[in-house]
Image (cartoon, rainbow, N blue to C red; front, side):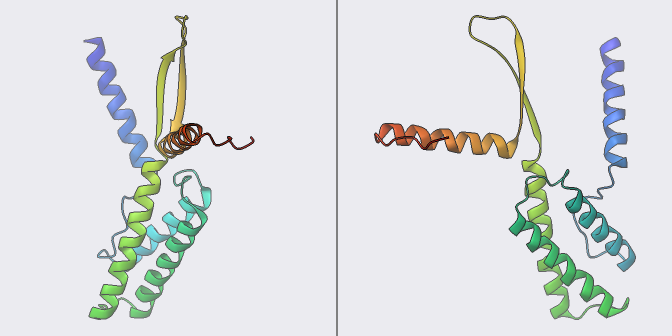
Length: 157
């Protein structure tokens, strides 16, 4: 019974944290213009903070910012009227760019903690890294193993 109560409290706490985080999910330009502009300003604020999308590169951030500017310009020019088919295609393509980059960056920023025991010890330690850090560590380790197998000297650190 106690475990069930703890599980329910955990679910409620995580749901309220997700609701108050300010992120409204992927960009959706099919909504009214004022809601899209609000969502664009929220995305720009999240990019500026650098917490939610910490793993995004400067080039990707510039690409997202440019796409958001093009979307906002097209919506502002229409003045609340429906966009032409060419503008709709352009805005939809920019929306896909924004959603793809931000979803990948958000996934890469996810923290994964692993509890391990050192050899010969019963003491448990936690090792926490983001998905992107784990991927980079795996890639660098693989590169070093390949260099060792080819008898190349390791780069100086």
